[in-house]
Amino acid sequence: MTITSLAETVLGPLDDIPFGEGRTYAVGSEMIAVFRLRDGSLRAVSAVCPHKGGPLADGQIDNKVVVCPLHLYAWDLATGCSQSGQPPISVYPVRVDDGHIILGD
Image 1: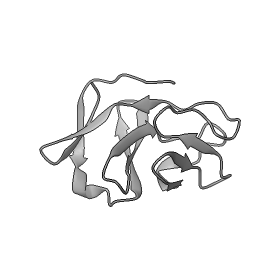
Image 2: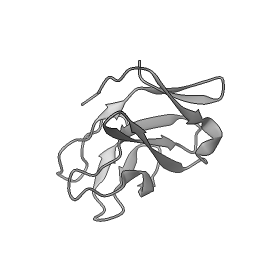
Image 3: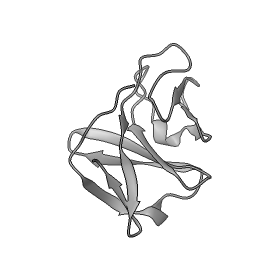
Image 4: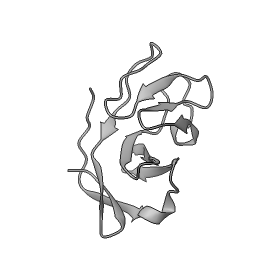
């Protein structure tokens, strides 16, 4: 598991991400994809597919994996581990506080 720590950052209102979708946020030099799963929980991972730079926030998700929209490679949203033989992606701590998405510890 590759958990990357960042300084606590307010990304925006939770309502900016519909259930079952993701959005990309620029945090310093990192691009972070935040997903609001259908069960209401959040996951945050690197927004860039390590294979060809695909936009992971535009990928298909369920409660466990994100699938890159370019070549259908999959990663576990909790651990960042590849389900299809690719390098792992970073995962980030994320939570909701007073209706806002908070990235970081």
